[in-house]
Image 1: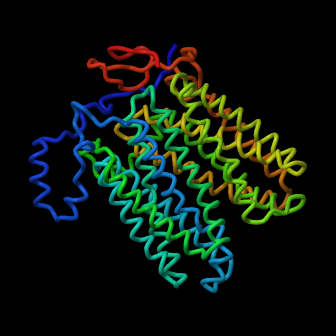
Image 2: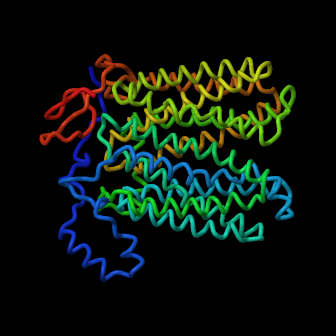
Image 3: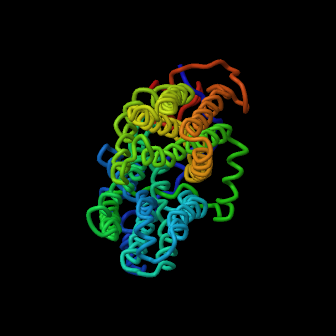
Length: 482
């Protein structure tokens, strides 16, 4: 049994069609001596991290955990300010409305980085690119630790968020470094780090602000950013650029073209939009539920509730290894979304009666939606291996727009109709996402339908040298079941 991937052409990344070192390691070091010392230092890589097409670096579990760690405390930068808005308003002597512009500017900067920086990952070597962005983020962050000006703090929040997109550059690199039969598992570990970043940021920020000065969370983040830079500098593997004959404007324009060529990308993005809406709507309105009767919890208690959302960190890698890596995408997304639907239904209709309702809601929703995103990421990375950063950009823009809609709609519906109706709207969104995931079968070559039937087992395609190149349904020089 097998799964059909999108038709592929010469854009498959293999050691034969990516840029290779031409003059050997000695010539590379000689050329670096002619560069500025800072540039040469940035481009230098430890021997074990250098790209060798005959013996490429292994993406083992330690490397996977390093990428997850980097993702956790990089994404967290976007959310530290959210629990601190009252304190920030008092410190800078501005209204709460103006203070709320800080997380808004952070999200705007992140969106700008997704659009204008992430696609560059298809043009340049990812190692020096990620290192440069990490160093810039940490250096800009230093200003947030010192400034007493609201306008400067606002501007620096925006600028630091532009370069905080490094996890979205590292995720496609995971797709490049891992074989197809392990890709979803590796992606789920890194994606779990991103979820941890969102949850830990709010939790740590609330605890530190409650027990000491609010600025200390920014000092902690500064130390973590430089620690991430050092760890990546020492251990992040190098990888050659996948495109050397395309311009930056064409890179940006081609993102739109990809949506016209690949149904998998379109459906995955629509599902990401709907799932992200449900996710942010829940976590936004949950604060209102827990701060009002019958609960009336404090800010710290509400922050601790985020621990209920840690289920993806524990169970998603297991689900990915047993299901997503072995079976078709449609099976993975159907199972995971059914779990999410179950959690939302329980939380929606018991959330005002017992605390167990929101806890189950959080655990099953986070697991189901994150497992769906991992399965869809693994699917879209297979359709155009040389355009994985652009595919990821298109997909994440859909998810980002979903987050904005979820926050807006969730707040408004909760204010007008309450918890049950707000959660019911999320339930409808996830049910629609489930339907979209079943519009197109694994062997369908068009945009809609299940022509060719369906199979459950995923098959890994091998090229003439035995290298795994993707998943298909009977083409290629060799196959093996994962």
